[in-house]
Image (cartoon, rainbow, N blue to C red; front, side, top):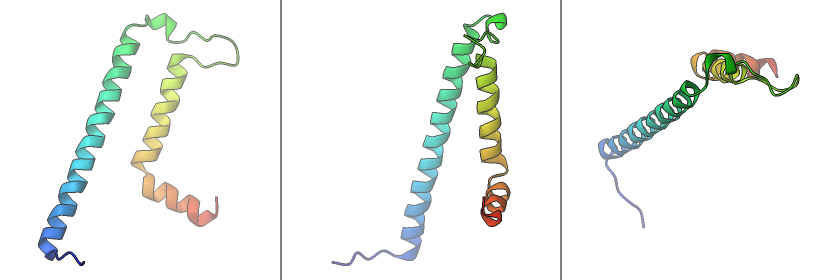
Length: 89
């Protein structure tokens, strides 16, 4: 059985789902960000740079890496990814 949708109805439905997904994703991102900030507020500043051993990373280093990874992943996505793809990397 074929379902019949008008083009405006179909586009409206797609836009609603896209908008809901984007809002849900942003809400989740903000929730995790707040959770991380609250966790780090409980750690004294001098402990943020503590390392278990020479091979481990401190909390500050882990947060710095996460921040850099997210920044590169979300700010220069198309330019950076397409250059890598075209270069065969």
